[in-house]
Image (cartoon, rainbow, N blue to C red; front, side, top):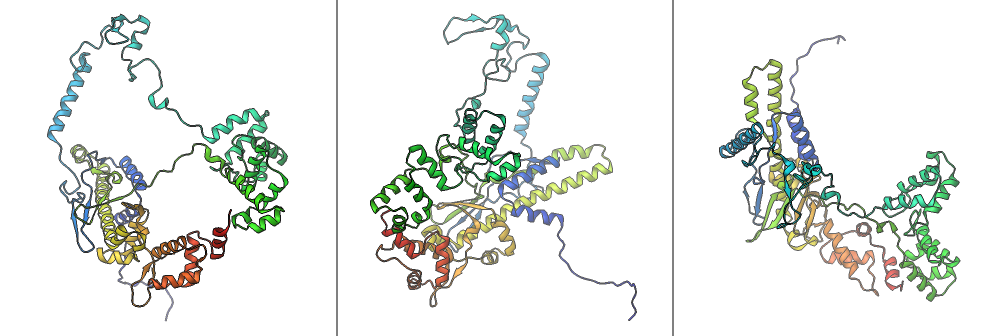
Length: 533
């Protein structure tokens, strides 16, 4: 066979990701915050898009009457809905007429100098305006120097007084950083020490502990480690005691120093806090060289201290996640599932503006740009509608599949995989995966991520169905919480109890689930429950 260049004609099939398809997939996996940012960027770039300021009345809603019946009601109007092929709606003639009348009135007022309500001229002599302090008092002339300041002094934009707004006068709690910076000026004198102190303050976490090493700070600032330690020692005297500690032992030591209770025995006690965590009472007694009564007193004193002194200051409260889907019980039975209209961006194509610019003399370049903008706007409206419909379908099927969970709790959560939902709604499981990522549903039992309801299956004993791994975890927690102090349940015993309830779980699986719940071993639990600490 000769080696050389040649031409071959071949025919093949391939999946091409068009820009529109890529956009639809991208929108599907965005959460509500990311979606809002994306839509705002499109509104800025595309002149044919505008925000729909109508009241939320197009939210999707599905009533799930049970696990076998589901009806759709009032889905959002899509690209082919009542608003037309592009998601447009007609102009309200009455609203347009009212807006025109208002505009004409304002225009006449601007031209003639008359007030909108037909009052006196805007050029009236305000020097002779009258004011009174209280209703019913005799009017008193306003001094000429304050005439314009008094005229319109109601906190409006025309007022001459520069008084702060209401939101600027609200009281606020002082943050930890503000408190420490104010105290820093009284503790150190030189500029270098204040610079070191400011960096140490910025190194604190919310609990009041230093996050980085002092050596690293000394290298960054180009100073001696002794200078950093000296400033740190001064800052550790600030109230509340315990701030600027590098570990729990130092935090508690600073608080005991303030109380005058840090003796040598207490130092040894603090150096062996791991024994206290394990409830190893004999070990603490042997290390400290004291009897049981003294150990009990030391434990009581330690419990009076604050392991996180930074919590005494005001911190930003974490805002709860905004759900994408709302769920509530239906009076006649079943559930009502609807999209959260507050998280749905409402955009439409401005046909009025499109007709206006198309009627003029438009060049080929501008016409091509307008066509691209129109195509992008139509696809965005269609993609947003498709995204809302898909989320509603997936969420509704999840509610149907996990109906027992919403009625009975975690113990009734059944195993579920993406394919189970995808097969019912006739979509690919990758689409279901994108829909359930970073999407939340508000239920009577709380706010959950949609992925929470997809759990692996733990085999049932005999011919019974499998059990959700989350349900097995919950059952292990219930058994351990209810165990008798004299009969602590080992992992082997837990395996037997679960098997008797139809949950065929291996011992290593029980140990893994127990560790994930933060529950100690049977030996540690026996020590904790029998200890007097």
